Length: 480
Image (cartoon, rainbow, N blue to C red; front, side, top):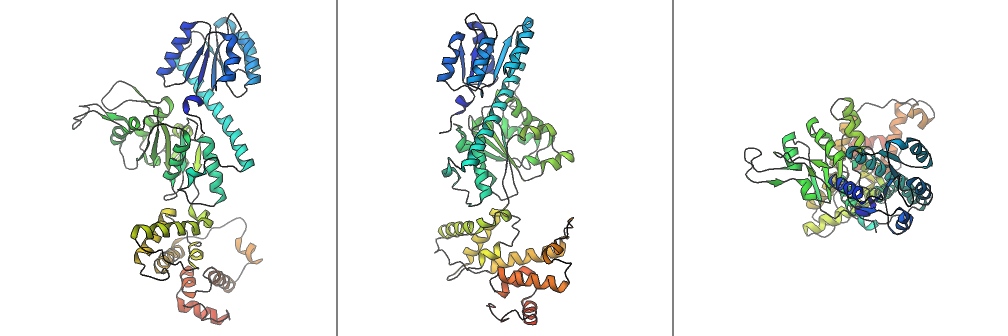
């Protein structure tokens, strides 16, 4: 089982002064840290570590029984994955230099400022998280294992790239860090977010909101909520979606469409885990895990001055890139079967027989709307279906329109190495290219001239003449 966040982020405070332990613990809790354990007897530190899973250690340098400088090398040797932050006095800097050489992650000088302590702890968690991710990812890839296949059952795929994506998700999902899901419209980003939530161990709800089109006022009120009387019409206090998510997951879709003011508020939420409800001057703490998604190129938006650079790099640590359907062509038959079953069940119809050439025809289509578009195409075909073999008309019409549109508007790609020369061994004539395209279209359509003509963007009679002219077997074969 995936350990809950309280175990993953557990902090051990080691100090011989009980007052220091309690004040530090209260300060950390006020800044949103949980799972804090204290130890006033330094001689029991190693024994404690053998029994309790700890993420970060805050270790006082001067203690009567066993000093921090004595404990440090033993901790580093036995528990190299646990970052150790030393707490020292001003006159012990030489000792600190020695401690850093021995493997300490950081040091803090008394009296410790709360902001400095919080910053150091967050960096320690990030470093530990990345180290564990690299180790786990290596193990996953070497063994090709998937620990929670049941979580991904709603994502229909047999693609190797998607399996590698699932393995990466299993590694990063239990961390507390935000995750950015990138992918074109219709690839299933919300399904991926739901899978991350299920694996994460979050104990609260999964709350999703599409923030495209929200101005800053709507964004703030939707996420943060408001106090009674905060604005005209605010007759009662209302909690925002962050409070609704609680210790669960808040999924923000289409973050590339946020305005700058909203981006600043999101950045503060990510960095400080705190926010202000509209009309309130009392800061609220957030325990929600944040997952964000976009179909936009954020780097391009940064270059255009429409997305904050610091927000992008805050999201850069964990990115899940969902490939478009055209890069997962082996999934088309699986998705086709799944959507046919679902559409027939929803409509109360018998599942129609699929023409064998349909999957081949769909494999040459660009699918700008990805999986969502395929689902809509299948649903439309099943609605129109009256019996027997599923009609190809609705599919062929969409693919034919796409082919004609592409022929009329898309410009050829000029590469450093001419692809035509690579394909033919020389620069081909127009006739050679035409013959090649006709031959490939007929292969994909399995000899069906009607489908092949749709792919090529020419009339059926024109294709028939070309086949006769070049002696393509029996030109009437497959013309049904």
